[in-house]
Image 1 (cartoon, rainbow, N blue to C red):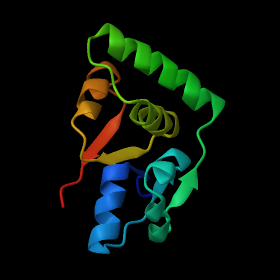
Image 2: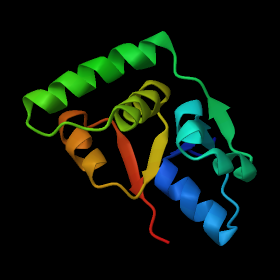
Image 3: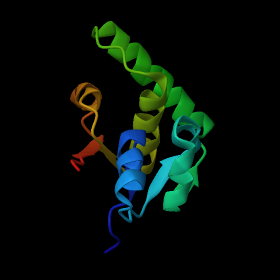
Image 4: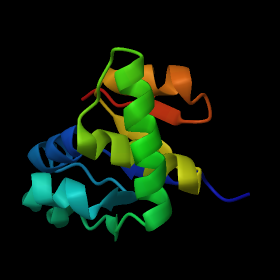
Length: 112
């Protein structure tokens, strides 16, 4: 059975660079724009698709309606993870709000 694929959020990438810890998996081009040194980790870089952006728009609207707006890059990250069935690795608590509305989102809290 194939190991679950992990999508790393910017805050985990920053800690990975800082600690020089090897991490394997994916991130998005948006995360590398937020933190260019993330390229040092040699993660596979995904470019969000039209389907990802359309789902991100839906998620963003849902979260605003629930009174918990989420930063745009994080909404797109959630959409990428959902559309690809990846585990989203993060330290951010606001992904819990998204998971409440989109229970298929898999979130792994990575503490360093």
